[in-house]
Image 1 (cartoon, rainbow, N blue to C red):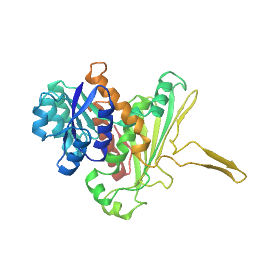
Image 2: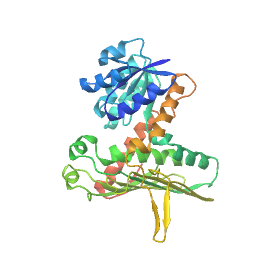
Image 3: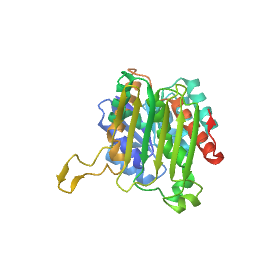
Image 4: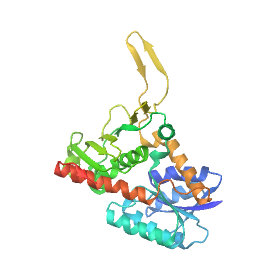
Length: 328
C-alpha cells in the first residue's frame, strides 16, 4: 500500500482524493493546504492526517506526493519532494516561467525520482483509442489534426490575471495533445486571438478566442480552436485525417437518448464541465501513476512534456503579439 500526501484540498484535489482512496494500492495518508477548513474537511472524510509541508516531506511513511495546489507552488514542492526521495504526481503546469521549469526538472534529474505531470486528456479513453488506432496504421500517415476545445463559460477576470493567460492555462492541454497524437515536435507555430466573450478578460490583458496552427517536420499540420464560451456544454473533440481515412473522437454527452420526430432530432448536450467530461481520464492517469510507483511502468507524461507544452504556449504568445509565424 502506497501512502500519498495530497497537497491541495480544493476542487481538483478533491477529485484526486476520490481516486487515491478508491484504488486498492493507495491510501490518502495526509492532506496539506493553507486553507485549514478545506484541509480538515477532506482529511475527516478520508480519515487522513493533516500535515504541514515540512512534516509531509520528512515523514518516512509518505511514499509519494500528489501536487494539486496553487500553480505558483508546484515547482518548489516538486524540488522539495525530489530532495526527500518522494515519487511525484503534479498537476499541470510545473510553473508558468519556462526557466523555472527547467531548474525544477534539473533537480528531479539530480535526485532520480519519478515525476508524472498530469496532462489528463492523454488518458481519456476516447482520445487514447484514437491514438492507438493511429499508431496501428489505421489511417496511415497523418496529414492534419483538428483539436476543438471550448469551455462552457469564461473564468473570472481575477483568475485570468494570475493564470498566465489563455495559452498557458487552457491551450496548454491542446499543445500537449497535438504532440501526443502526431508523435512529433512541432517546427513552426502561428497564433491569432481575440477578446469576444468577456470585456473584463481583455482588460486583464488576455484573449478568450483563439486559433493556433502547428506545423510538424513530416509536413502534418494541427489546428487548435479555443473559446472560453460554449453555450451548449464542454466542447472537446479531435479529428485526425490521414492518407487512408479519418479518425474522430466526439463529445461525451449527458445521455445517449435521441428523440426523432417530424421536426428533426433532439439530443442531449455535451457534458457541462471538465470534472464530468474527464472523470475516466483522471481515474486512468492515477492507475498509471500507481503502476509507476509499483515499478510496473515509467511515467508516460513526464517533466519534459510539461516543459514542451509551456514552450509552445510561450511561442504562441510571441506569434500572437508579432502577427508572424514563429519557427521552433
